[in-house]
Each structure stands twice: as structure tokens, then as C-alpha cells.
Length: 189
Image (tube, rainbow, N blue to C red; front, side, top):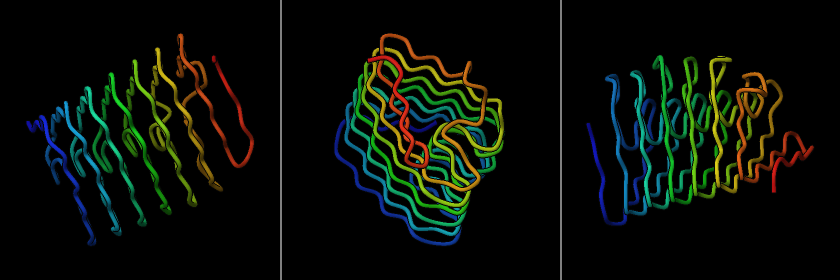
């Protein structure tokens, strides 16, 4: 278990297989609150916040998170090879950019993803051969957006914003703007 409370953090990682904040091969529980966290990653394979090889449970409360990642196989927040990622974001600001051959901005690259954002704002941009914003290659992904403003942009040949069926994306009293390969869809407002 790892918690970050109060303060301002800037973490830069570069290498073959890296983790910015979290665990390399173990399951991890992360609680980040009342702080500002910026991660930058340049790696062949890695995760900015979460676990590389284990499952990740991540709680982001009353904070500002900025993540930038570039590489071959990348997860921004969640897990690269773990079975599950659960991410809860409340009363916060989240922004991220990712460029990868294979990438997942939020969730599990090959496993179950649950992502919930409430009373928050989020802006995300992903680009690459096969990239996803929410979850990865698995259709076992659930996304809940409530009382939030979310704007994402995905540019990819083989990926998508979310691989799961659209009924697994819940938007309640929120605004969700998705731009996929230059085509924009807005839900709520």
C-alpha cells in the first residue's frame, strides 16, 4: 500500500521497463490525495501510476494529476500486464497525454478495468498504432462519469476510446466529449 498526501511531486522515469509511482510486479493499492503530482515517462514499456505486472487499485482525491508518457507498450494510470485495474477519481483535475505503439491511458491493458470519475475534470490525448483511453484490449471495461467534465482525443489505427460496448460507459449529470480520429461526439452538457 502506498499513499501520497499533501505536497507537490514531479517524477521523471526513463528506461526499458519502468514504474513512476507504484509497484513493478506486485498488486498495489495507491491513495493519492490533497497534492499535485506530475509524471513523465519515456520507456520501452511502463506505467506512470500503478503496477506494471500486478493488479492496481488507485484512488485519486482532491488533487491535480498530470501524466505524460511515450514508449512502445505504455499505461498511463493502471497496469500493463496485471489482471485488473480499478481507478476512482473524485474532486480533482486529471490531464494526460500518451504516445505509444500499444497503449492504455487509464486501466488494465489486458484485464478488467473499472474507472469512475466524479465532481472532477479530465482531459486526455492518446496517439499510436493501437491505443485506448479507458481500458485496453479487453472488453471487460466499465466507465462511470458523474458530475464531471471529460474531454478526450484518440488517434489510432487499431485502437479505440473504449473497447467495451457503449452501454458500459455511463454519463450522468456530466459532459463527455470524445474525439476519435478527428470525429467528435458529445454526450451530456
